[in-house]
Image (tube, rainbow, N blue to C red; front, top):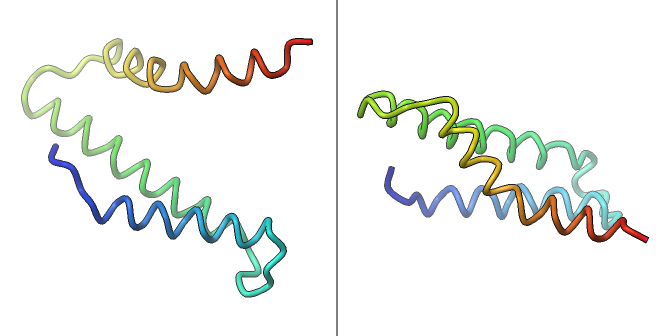
Length: 85
């Protein structure tokens, strides 16, 4: 799948919605709009990855979840180390 630059723009808008909500700005009464946008974008990207790999006959659940875990590993380590006293 080629890189989609417009997805980054949508991600930025979603993050701005969430930050504006938690920053106390009442222009956007619900910060959940940004969260919903982020979930839709993530669903689109994950579905595209699965469909493309199935078209090329190299999809496996193990490989898919392994890539997701490797991607989330740095954030998990940072949170675990942050809460260790």
